[in-house]
Amino acid sequence: MKWSLLFLFLSLIGLPVTFAGILTDSTQQRRFQNLAMQMGLKAPKLKPEEYEVRIWQTVALKYGDAHLAYVLRKTKKRFTVAKYLIESNKDGFQYAIRVKPTAKITTALWDQLQKHYLLTLPNLSTVLEEVHTRQPKDSTWNEINNGEITVKARRSRRKRILVLDGEGYSFEVFGHNTYRSYGYSNPFSYIEAYPDSEELHQVTGILNGLSIIFRSDQIGR
Image (tube, rainbow, N blue to C red; front, side, top):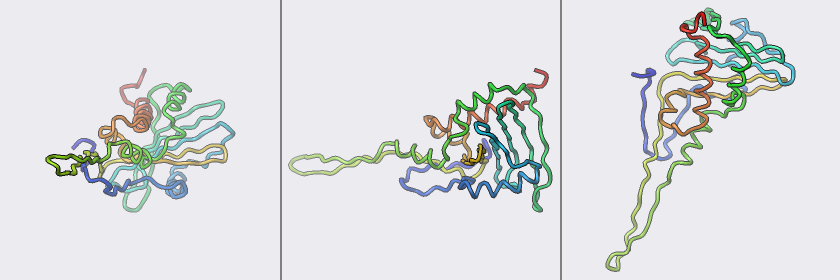
């Protein structure tokens, strides 16, 4: 099945949905702090208008807090991007392999990511709440036939999607004395269900842009 996911489409209004992998800032920071130390990543020391963004990919039904990471660092002098493949087992973290980009890294990539609101995107839960709010609501009206009043109703077909399996992306944004985080569970699946969501287009644009610079077919270009 595509993306190894199971989709459940719901038309029931108000059905609760749980979004895995989306945590508060403090919880997420604690979750990945130990993993970052095991990988040899140091706590960022940044000047004003400098940033480090860590994107952690988690795959369902695998050991470990994360299985892939991108580390983007933008200082006044340099912009670097690194990719890590993370291996864990039932005993915990084992090792991480740093992968070099196969395309040249320039500040143009940073500018492109900024256009996708890399530093300021909201959580997926906020995005889906807005999407569902914009969907048409149920309506009722009265009809009079031969002196009898009949109340009729039209129930809108609100579409909600629950992804039960797949992958999640947790974003940590470090700045000068600042920290924030946000998360997206299965953005490539949700965008198929909600193609009008600007935020889903932005986050998938970020992930696609990073994936391209590590593609094996870019070697030598």
